[in-house]
Length: 358
Image (cartoon, rainbow, N blue to C red; front, top):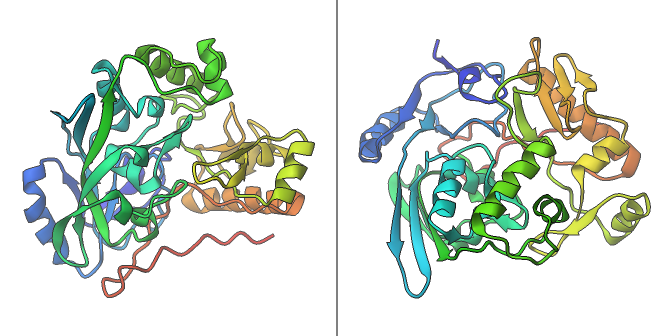
């Protein structure tokens, strides 16, 4: 019957995968890849399962849980160092390691669940930093060519919460990451008001690295952005929608109504998805679909409870997005990844988009 994906995702939803494989030791990859290639279906790589909405029927092919661990540091010129981490290393552990070593560059990414490799699929970001900002290269397995390859940052199609690994999920599996960080006892300048308030510093300040990292963790807990270990909100995948791009006219309307608008690192205007969801009438604790509720701390996080299914969670996403579209004219894009099989013959086919009827 296979291994239940519900046992490997933070939503605790999802049917079986057969085979379900765990990649623990880097040296074992050639044999594991050879075993996977014997199947006619392409594999899905799973990190910590914190951003995955697996289907109730499971996944029709091999699933590989990336569980490799390990971090190494190599000195570069001046105050620069290269940090190499295995794809299965938890992102939180990697951030803590760099902060403890007085290495600046990813200190604002603490408290985000998932693995280092998975962070590049989503181009994880927070408080003005994105994981792709520091990458020098990625080692990945190319299922189309049947070989391990080195990808440069320009090859990866990084954008706001996206990459080629997200748009072409059947093509590559990330095995190892390399980051260029800076030796420093101070953090990057604080650019977000929430963090500045948490640290009691002005915008633009460069607090001590440990203080900045702890401030991020404290602020995430205070605003309900951390993954709780227990309680009614324990089964969740964090924010369920990306902050949507808006036109200048839409941005003006959002600001006039008291909503936040910011520019992403590419300069595009984006509205707050959480604010839009609340404007559409959803509030913390509200039930959205059978077994699916807005979390007790914030409407943008959906929590699965006893009678939830992947289908009801998808219904909840559709209802939120449809109400926001009807209320504001702004389209939301879901953040959790839904594993879909793409044929080996066309590894560039992206997964089908979720449809949100109004």
